Structure formats: C-alpha cells, structure tokens
Length: 392
Image (cartoon, rainbow, N blue to C red; front, side, top):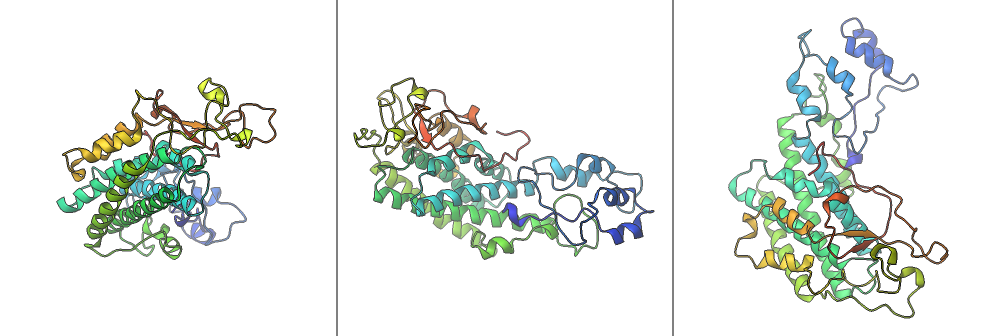
C-alpha cells in the first residue's frame, strides 16, 4: 500500500517560470527542486509520514487559491492532524502489510511468525480498528465492522501464543487452521480498506489536476498497483457488509477450534536439539537448558492465565461479539502478552543464529505486560511504522 502512494512532483520548471511572479510558493518550490530532476518524475513518501509531501515551512506559507493573504486553514488541518480518513487508510495499509506477512510466512512454513505478531501489536497495524470505531456507518455495517475489529484482536492473540519461538513443534493441523484464520482476517482487512478508500475518494473527488491541492489527493493514489498483485479488492455498494459477515463467521469458528485444540504445555527440550536453539537463560535468569524457546505455544504457570484463556472468556461471554469494542479487547489481551527476543546465551557459541542482545529499539515495548509468560520472537529488524502522532 505504501508503494501505491505517489507524491506529486515538487515543481515543474516550465510552470514555475510561467507563474513565478504570481506565487511565492511556486517560486520556492522551483528553487527547492533538484536541478537534474525531469518534469513528470515522482518522489517517494516516507512510510512513517502521514503528512504527505508538504513540509511545515510550506504549510505555513500555503494560501487559498485566488485569495492572497489568507491561509487555507481547512486544507491545512487535513494534512497532519492524524484524524482524517486518509490516516485510517494508511493504518489499514500497515495492517494489510503485517497480516500478509504472517499469512505468507504460514504458507511458506517460515520461522518468523511471532516476529510479525509482535510487529502487529507494537505498531499502527493494531491501531486501525481503533480509528474505525468513531467513523459513522449505518447500524448493520457498523456492527460488522466492530465485530471484525474484535475478531482481529482475538485472532492475533491466539496466533501470537501458538507461534511463539520458531514454530518448531506446531502440528500440521494447527498450521493449517492458522493459515485459514489469517486468510479470512486478511480478507476482512481488504474489505475495510476498500470501504474507507471509497468514502475518502467520495469526499475528495478527482479534479483532473484543474486545481492545486494540499496534502493527499486521489491523483497521487494508485490502487491499481495493489489490485494487480491481489492485495486490494474493489467491492460495490452493499457488498462490504455481506463480505464482512461471511468472514466474521469463519474467523469466529476457527478461533474456537484453535482454543479447544491447542495445548498450553511446553514441549520438553530434546537432547538432540542444537545448543543455539535453546531458550536464552539471560532473559529469564535461568539456565540455558531450562526449557525450549521453540515449543508449541508460550509457557505458562499454573497460577497465571494465558491469551487463550482470555480469548475463551470473550467467546463464552453472553455479550455478542458485535456489541464489544475492539479497544477494550485489545487492552485486555495486552495484559497477557510479553514478547521477548530470542538471544544467544553464550557469545562464544558459533552455532547460535541469534545475537547476544536485541540491537533494535522496538515500538510498543511499553504496552506489553511485565509479568506474563514470554512469547519468543526472532530479533529481526523492525518493518512496520508508527503513524499516530500520539500512539495509543
């Protein structure tokens, strides 16, 4: 999705010469433009920016076309307040990238599933559903959107628990159910992305470049790129609610199956396991051979609940899922999540694939529980952004 967004060229030499005496803004853009840049080329937008290609300096100089000396406050407020519909589009695009990575990893039997689960919970990927709650929809569609948000949180909570470590010990049946689960969660994301995009495009109709616009505009958004790689679905009016209802039913069924069939016991460390694949004792202040970090599901003590128990409580509640709030479910599940990087217990071990410490500063570390059982993940470089000016 980030690759589909194209910013407008900073300036065209011919146009700047024609209008240089009329607009100080166009003159400034001409000076700032790269000398070797050809007209018609585009510049990429930072994936962590939700303010488009308008700098704060230009933003203060922005004038209403045809009204010299007055500032277009309405246009400027839509650039970087973080509350506009396009901000939700960016969050949903981040969510789609995270879900697609998890689904693709499950299809390829990859070992980094828990890493992308941690990326989901710590970045703007998990904020998309929170931003959807205040958007006004008709009652039936609103309930399906809310249910989709609740089920997304439940699904990622279960997936995080079951995929702890490097997926060693996860049965073929569980892997198949996880693939099925993430497929429908990802499809829900595509439906919501199209729903919000259609509303945003309706509020910002395409003008064919007849007037200058500030910030994001349909001229700079190319959804065909995502359509060609099957990562965007165009739906007609009325189809969104039908698709969400079907996907929500499938997701709820698979989550119940995973909660019933999953075990929360730690698989004993095999004597034949490579030394580098053992739990890093330095994280738990325990010997390195105290357990396996690659086991099926996160470990738990007898007195401590797990994400699975929290998910079961939600599913067993008498309150319908479409009456719950995604924000409340997210806050509840975060109390049972604590992600820890897989680290080498001994820096002198040449066979260990992991570093002795996590070299990256990761988003969302302050959100996770300090007492919950660890969910191990491979310490890969962060990939998903924080788009909120004030992350929740």
